[in-house]
Length: 278
Image (tube, rainbow, N blue to C red; front, top):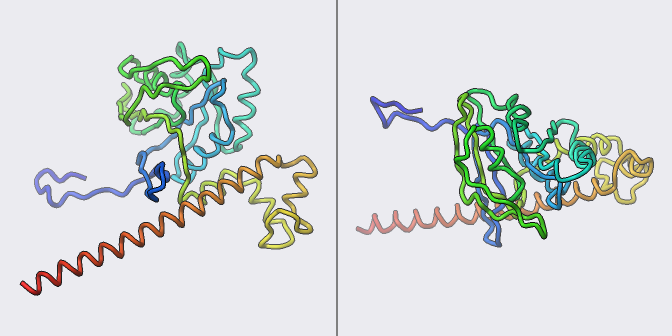
């Protein structure tokens, strides 16, 4: 909040939302992706890119940040019947809207505009080649963002967008175009995961034992739901994987932050000692 007459009295406002992940590699750092986003358009396409597990990761990330996630299924023109893709996307969570279309023409503006209100900020998230920049251009009513076609052999993108850029729509909505992420390791996202898998959480509350691991315990409501066909066993497996990954990454990064804090304290102590000796 800039105070132009007294710049030193200016203050930094608290973030309303934050997208972050564990940075690729083994350095135990977290990478901040974007802040103050109202709606996250999670983009996938009707080809080899479509993976439910990946959609769940992005959705958990958005829910943890208290953003509104919307799954956008593009390239419906590539398949005879895109309904299977749409149904699979809707199965991710009944809390998340799903829109599907061919990105050519007016469909992107028509179907995405309800979330692109003046004063709001939206972001396109997803792999390279799913059409994020094409959708951003459609909302901006321009071709200012460079795009490329995907590789035909494996439907992978070519990383046309190499940095995050914020663009203004004619109506005053801001659009964040971001590079595709090959690796999305969750950290500090337990609440988002629980929100995404609310169906499993609700079943777990009905188990006989509070610490039920949903493995072989008697009177396990989760296992009963799987036996009765109410819950997909693959969904339970993906939930377990995300929870374990998040717990491990969160602990690793907490350890890193604690070590860095202790090191900083030691450095300040040494500097203070030197100042005293002078």
